[in-house]
Length: 116
Length: 115
Figure (cartoon, each protein chain N blue to C red):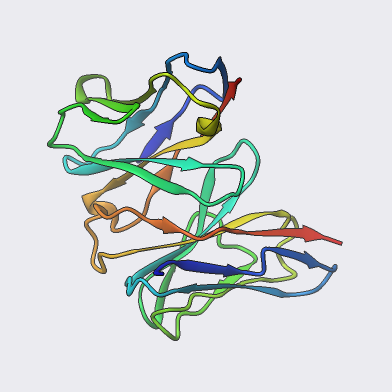
């Protein structure tokens, strides 16, 4: 089945540690996104990528990094610079490489990150 | 600026009641798109509907209906004869022709349907 796979489902981070969240899609979508969800704050965009080897910062990129070496994969690294990383992280993808915004985003099941 | 407001943080209804979830948006784009998503307790956001700015026809899909009114910048979602399985957080989202593929989400409305 086509879809978006996020792993792991739960992740724990120690102080000063970088952790990487995986996101893989087999929908042949050009665009991929990372969101952070906190209670009562909805979804906030961290990074997005509209094409391989290119990505843009979203509203809350500080303390995070991404790469887009393959069309199918868009991993997110939560660095030690992110002082409050505890949240639910959602990855999404959509068609439409060059703007338009008319295509729905499809989401993975999310990764819940907590601080030890 | 693009903005979506969902003023209702939490709603509780008794099963079989109708419920309307409000969504108000702000945009300077003349071409834009509105979406509704459902987030059940499992966490994944499920796409429900897309509406473009040129199509103000209301839409009905089973027990779900959507009322898009450009005059009031609203895109409200009604569930008729609610069921326990409708319990979830519902998000309204906006994207514009000039904002690329970037979506702007509201803060969500948590709906609880009591049996």
